[in-house]
Image (tube, rainbow, N blue to C red):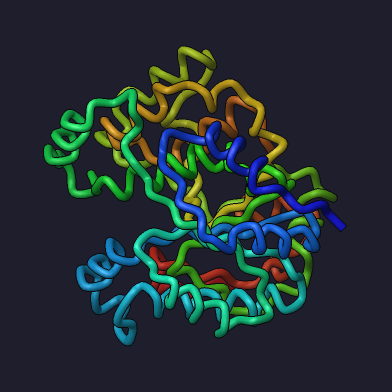
Length: 318
């Protein structure tokens, strides 16, 4: 059994985490005590912004036909996550949220009493070393369709840098990212994390992308090439990482995470978290596999189940 984390210790760690403001629920200490009974092997992370994403649902219909708001999508995700994985492997779920009410959180907890939840309200802010007016001006430029918004940049910063410093997540061996509109469609009957440990796998992702938008990654190749001479963005892996699993010990202590230029370029040039993860994989020679890379695995693809994602709505994986 793990030991509980004191609120004082958490506050100290959190102050080191990022420049953003953390708003912890009054029940946070109680939630931490719940986590203390869990295996410290892995934690599942879901990042959700209710108001922002409700607008996305309206923009993306008919893809989300039958779902009226982000809360409904999140409940669908959790239902499938429990049915097809957590009912066999009781790993905790950390929900990082913005603009959800206490009633929303109560609904989630009461709907899935079998899941060990930790809820954390986050208020992502533009880092203090950046000029806010310049960031907003850059976003307003919108030179390409996929330039995205401020919320998207907050998300990229979190998964590219902040997640590895998070006081709860960093205490685990692995984290699994699942988006609040991702659905595990069929049962996963084998413990994914133990398979990764047995095979020495550092990173699992959904599928390989050729590359992200060139305009969105201006200067990325030059930046990473200055650190790693043989880095070539056009030749190396860009994982589609809306679903991914990271072995935290493979990256958490690396100095690259303290390089403020990565965060600066996420906000000013819309660098994405996926190509940044690809750069980490190359820089530190991480063993990375996709859930479809049967030939590179010592276990069968069927052990992973079928994972269905928003970007592949019309595709059935088998």
